[in-house]
Image 1 (cartoon, rainbow, N blue to C red):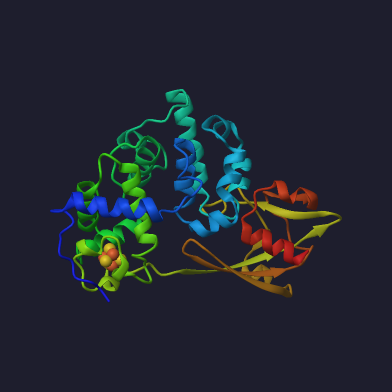
Image 2 (cartoon, rainbow, N blue to C red; image 1 turned 60 degrees about the horizontal axis):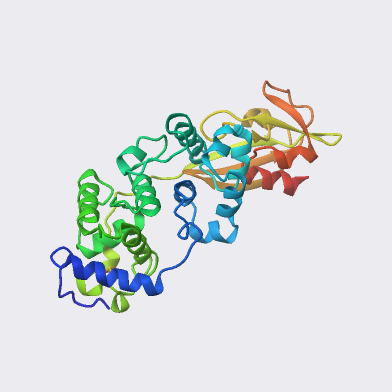
Length: 335
Ligand code: SF4
């Protein structure tokens, strides 16, 4: 049940900030990226969490492992692409780590390894959008930069009973304006973390706990689960791949990937459906990547014609090669 709000968050902004901070100081979670003020560590965590859940990053110690391998901008700036792709394996959306490296290289070459403090300068770095720039600026430097991620957008849409599509230009403009107006400029780090965490706890996408909500007395909506309003989702694209497992002695034939989904990765050799039709299908494997639902039809057949970019690799060297994790799983299951 939604409780009635007796105060508006903007006209009572000080009381709103106090209520939010009081709750966060007692109930706020501690994550590895919250106990540091290192802008590189914070940037890595923000990029990692863009399309990967906190639970998955924590459970697999992805953040700690990545930071161990690339503790600073200098280390990643000098690393070969194959090494950064290997370190990002399993997280998907590999352009994220490519952009991390590009940003690190700019910081090293143009700013002697020092991060800019302001969100407007951070936003000029490759792959860093408005949210990430604000997150690094406020979390690392405690600068008064507002942030809006999915959690904050949901909380604000409900707090202000906002029924415009939040992913439209008009919706984004309004939400960012509120994030800026509400921001506690004396403690932006804590305020931004708290608002985000409210969206991960009390004000969730699938359930809300309005009766116990620390800022329930300021919340204008009476129907939280109908908000936020978003544009209809894009449909999934179904893809069928015909892949070959070709082994010779202790070696496996792999193909160097190209195109946006596979660039820089080794893949099983692929052939057209017509070419694959003369072989017997051994198994089928399914995985989803970004907007693609992929079915891999797997065959064995040493007589396929080799094409450019295909090479045999020793099975012992597979761990060193960047291979997208669904493909690695298929190989492991089929050897
Ligand atoms: S949980 Fe969300 S919808 Fe419910 S009172 Fe709190 S801010 Fe409003």
